[in-house]
Length: 304
Picture 1 (tube, helix red, strand yellow):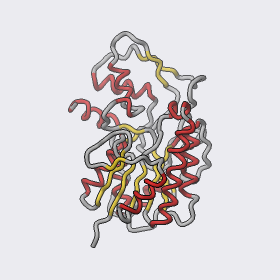
Picture 2: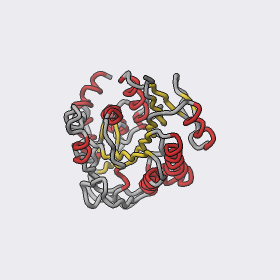
Picture 3: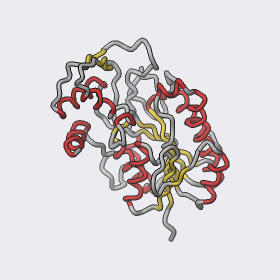
Picture 4: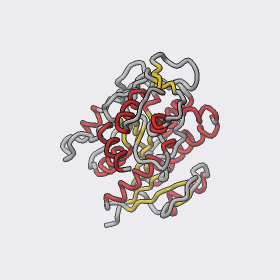
C-alpha cells in the first residue's frame, strides 16, 4: 500500500510551515513543501506563476492525494498597491491548480479568508452571500469562484480568519506584530483599532484540523469554515499582550470609530462553524479544537 502524498504550497510561510510540520509529524503522509521567496531545507523551490512548472509539480512528483494551497498575497494593504500581482497569485494560481485537480485527481484545499464578507451580518454560514470590501477580499473571493468553477475538480475552499502563531518575524502576522507595538516603550503613540471585532486563530490549530480533515472517510463540502471563537479588537489584544509582558500600555490609544482612511476592513466577519462541527460528528474527534488565545500566548511568550 502506497503512502498518501500531500503537497503544501507556501510551506515557508506562517500557515504553510505549520501545515507542513503537522502532516510530517502525523507520520501518515509523504509531505512535499513548496516555497518560493524563502529557501528552506527539504523544500522544493517553485514559482507558482510559472504554468509549465506548476503542471510539472502535479505530474513529475507523481499523483498527489492532496494539495494544500497556502501561498497567497494575504496583506490587504500590500494587495492594494500591487493589484496585478495579487490577481495572479490569489486568483489565477488557485484556478490553475483546480484545473490540475480535475486532470490528475488530487484533492485541492484552497485557503481563503473571512474577508470575503462585508462584516454587516455575522455570523456567516458557508452559503452566505459574499461582498468583500477591498481588493484583497475580492481576489480571494474570485479565487474561490475559480477553484469551485472547474468541472471535475476536487477543490475545497477553507475559510479562516486572521492568523497568529509561531513566526520567524512578528511582521509575518497581523496579530503577532501587535507585540512590537506593546513593546515599543520609546514614547511613540499608537492609535489602535477598537472598532472591528476579530477572531484570531492559531495556525497550529488549523494545521491539525487539516490533518484531521484528510483522514475523514466521507465526502467533504465544497466550502468549510474554521475559526476560533473568542472575539477581540486589536486594542484588546494589545491589552492582553501588555498584561502578559507586564508592560505599560498608555502609549496605545483606542480608536472606537470606523476608520475613514486606508484599506477598508469589515466590522465583524465571524465565521459560523456549526456545519464544520457536524462534519466531524462520529469521527472520534471532540469538537474542532482551538487554543485559548491568552493561555497560548502566556505559555509562548514565557518560553521565549
